[in-house]
Amino acid sequence: MTAHSASALPATASHASALPDPALPVPAHGADPSGPDARAAAPHLAAAFSQAESLCIKCGFCLPACPTYRETGIEAASPRGRLDLMYAAARGRVALAAIEPQLALCLGCQACETACPSGIRFHDMLEAGRNDVAALRRGGRGALGRRVGRLLLDRLLLSPRLLRATVWGLWAYQRSGVQTLLRAARVLDGLAPPLGRLERRMPPLRRPLRWRRGLSKPAVQERGRAALLTGCIMDAAFGEVHAATAYVLRANGIVLAEAPGQACCGALHLHAGDAERARQLARRNIAAFEAAGDAPVVVNSAGCGAATKEYGRLLAADPAWATRARRFAARVRDVTEYLAGLPLAPPHIAVPCAVAYDDPCHLVHAQRIGDEPRELLGRIPGLRLVPLREAEMCCGSAGSYSAQQPEMSRRLLKRKLAHIGTSGADVVATGNPGCLLQLRLGVREQRLPLRVVHPIELLAESYGWPASGT
Image 1 (cartoon, rainbow, N blue to C red):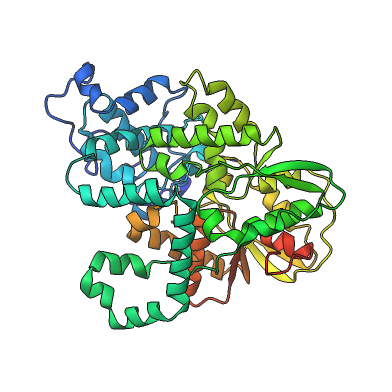
Image 2: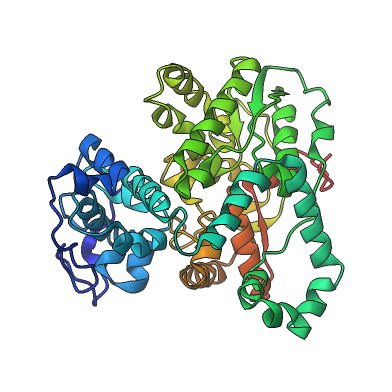
């Protein structure tokens, strides 16, 4: 990947990094930047900066790579500006609460890391800052909203049965006509306006698929084994992607090993500032996949893959798990990464369509995987890959970002759809659940004649996969 040029800066932007800045909070009065009491307000940030392997050189290469900076032209909404803010908070010069809005506005897409010539791990700083903010906000104002968030993270995502039942219920709500009636009558807008706004942003859901029934089928000329990270959202709402993954692997002689006891990967908890819960989930997954043998761990969700590949760092300070975590992380492969390394049987059924491939941020930036999905799609007879402008830029989904920052999310989705509309594609392929939902929402809202799918679904179709997912 090449660094972006800094020549594409918005005309309204300042090229200088500064504290204070008109867009930045004023340093906290009387704070001692070197005192332990000042740092205690942001202990995770202080630790992250003290352990950083490289620091910002103020080159500005990250600015044109950053979606929120390109949309606003504000220095504080850039990676460089956010690093200044976080460093100031870590030193006690700025109140942690004052920088919270800019940490919340950040997508966490890691495009800045691809552009950075110094190799700064921006997401380490961001996650540390969000951990400090989460600790600051516990029990404070807005506690009800946080309790709802905790309910979703700690109950819904951690209960496969409850999550599947919820997805089934939402699908029935959309398909039964109840959604149409409630929207026409504006019932939710009258009862609970925030809920009404959130409901209008609900993406269209596919009928949940019981995908596991295909796992018992034998592979063609068994050549190896792999274990599938089923995840939480992927398992409940994207069964067709798991079914397509199993079908392609089976067609190439790979048997999927079961890993009972696995759980949510912890990515959303980490992004929400709950590193301890993420560590608990990491330990559970490591133990589950150790029990399943030493086969590669295949992941078909970019966000889950990025999170599990980071387990070694996440548990580095835990002497009982550090080595096991590094060993597990080394086994993790995105499904396109894994397939690209195999001698594949040639896909033989034509899938005539023009496909625009949109890079999931946590695949192209976090895992540096961009060529493999395109190479696999290029093997499919009848399929034509078309260029997509800004394919590496975030679509605005970013996990729970679309619900927490709806305005910026909509702006980025509109930008993405405009590029898709001029690409000449009739199919959009992307490898992350949030991206799939976000793009399907945009396609529905703009009534575009487009199909939005995971790349593995197209590959499975070329191997003869029936759309039923069996």
